[in-house]
Image (cartoon, rainbow, N blue to C red; front, side):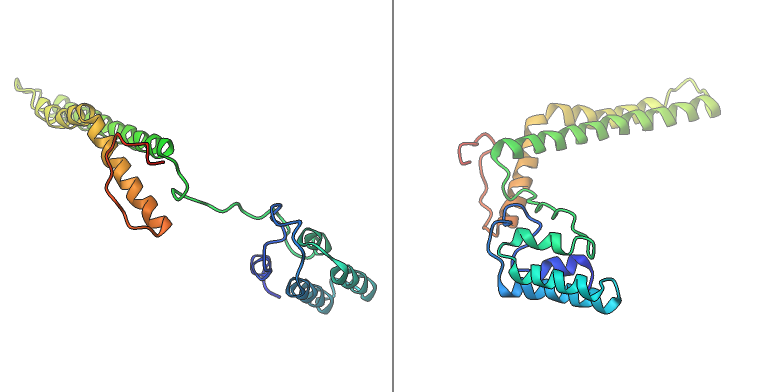
Length: 188
């Protein structure tokens, strides 16, 4: 017998989905359910009386919502996973929020890079040399420039992330990508 994921995908619509529970079941849907019952009977998981009773219920079922209860103890009947939409249906505010989160991640990385490199070099300087010249300052200066650049270019970085997210959104929707102005949120 095939696994429960495969079985649910054989229906015209997933009968576990509450949005389609009221739709009328087709002959194909009843046939899929009948095959599950036949396999369970052949495996010895149903006796003849249970098989007959469930087969009658499957044949009499009018809507998709009635079907999962008939096989709930034979295959997994957990609710269908909601479809992941990704960026396909994200609005301008959601795209902007994601872009700001990406910027905040960039900023965190820059700050942690600065702190880690400076700390490691300072410890090495303290343990190994203690020269008059504090050479870890050069490392701090180099990594600090990246932090300053990241903080001072916030709007440009957010706009670049928004552009990347919109391009990804257009790809998910199967539409050609059109560049847009970062401050133009009226298109949504």
